[in-house]
Image 1 (spheres, helix red, strand yellow):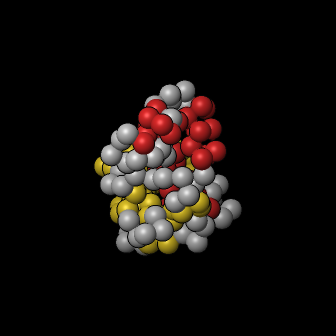
Image 2 (cartoon, rainbow, N blue to C red; image 1 turned 90 degrees about the vertical axis):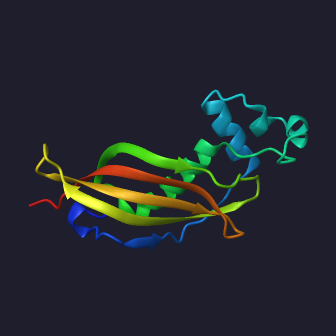
Length: 150
């Protein structure tokens, strides 16, 4: 597996993920359709021209999913059991069609599970950065991670 086991994570360890992604109009429209989100800020160009953004903005939950998703190959692919929660979610800047997003992940905390001796809990800090160097998404995420098989 490409992911790291609980023991392999180090507090303060930072991953600047090589994979980047340019967000397209199709990404935004499909995500809104799949999640039944009819928000005109995401879908209606004419409506959006009259907003402070002057154009459609990408659904923030797509952005968050992208930022976390990009991290999987370097951190949790095949070694995670599941997400336990997310906190401190924020979106400092909007994402527009054509923006390219890169992700940075930092390990904030880790501890052994009290109820499952073969697992541990890792707290990840995820940051999404656009091509202008602006932070567009941030969250802390707790993941239940497998320990190395014995």
